[in-house]
Image (spheres, rainbow, N blue to C red):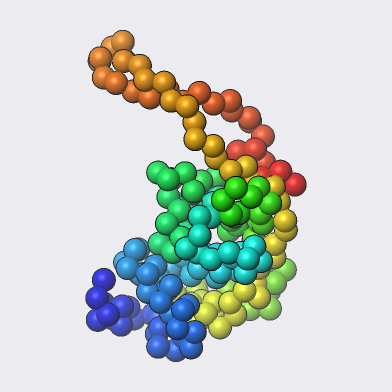
Length: 198
């Protein structure tokens, strides 16, 4: 996406963002998504917060589990190259504005949430988050960019890092096409499904 397209976004003035690194990250998300949603902006701040706690960079191999399909995972893909295909992004759609992350080969990670006990100090974000009233996109974005990490809480968790599954190749008995069969065990517990054990 061109610089002109970024500036045409009517609700977001990136020139008001003083942190050049953050500004560049937000531009990358805009290029990836075509616009900057509140959820994706929150994802950018969550990822930066997580990296600061874990002592890593977005460019490192990090593993992310997003607990919603709504915008949050896009930040991980746009900034950290976490995708479902490279197995560094998992989505456990519980409708929570939360993500877990860890570094490669280190099961000790963190889970970060957008905390309503903290958003209450930011009335626009709080109203948007709890869907209490209609909130203009430009208003919630301005408050997110101003507030940054102060609306998050986190806890240390154990993250199950996906191992490369051994694949078996078989031919479909009905159509004759080749398909993979992954040899995995499925645990029905929510904690196991999202890859964390407290």
